[in-house]
Length: 267
Image (cartoon, rainbow, N blue to C red):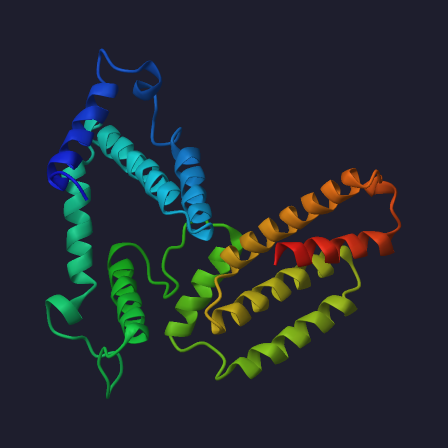
């Protein structure tokens, strides 16, 4: 790390103000909270990809792009006299202190006979504190507010996590596996397209729960599976081109042989 981080951050805030100022950049100056949404989402996925590739150089760059989005929104908030970067930082600091009473204050009781002892206890305490805040500030649901724009698999995992922390869950993974088999049977027996779609949704949800029991994030797992499939499929196409074959015209059994070859070469 080089330089004074506080000064570097302050310089970036000033830079964004200049870019959106009278003599700044036309594109930057016309952006709004809404117009920037797509970029925040895209940059978030690029951060995930850099993590998956274990690429520190790219991760550093992509985290900078995420920070740019934060700076943008704070600058717009200040121009609209709604909130400033200082408000954002103060809100975050207060939240971190409030959600970590085991570090900055009295340790909360997570049950009648135990306190915060490990990472799992911290998660439970965090969620309960968040739920208390949500009930006071917005609503009464124990599930809390999960943004509707959240991808469906991630949304499912978030609400099932919260339901679990309130005591609504199976006793072991055996119960989840039994439910997987039950939902598969209900999908097989569904008589209409509408019923099949409904049962398919239930099947996906219980698979998300199965992954949750094993510490697997469904959204991330499927994203990585998609990447593996795409890489292997592209390898099959390259192999066909190298051998003078037409991939679409190959019989299915030969496609399967190519798939296994591509899979083996990927490791």
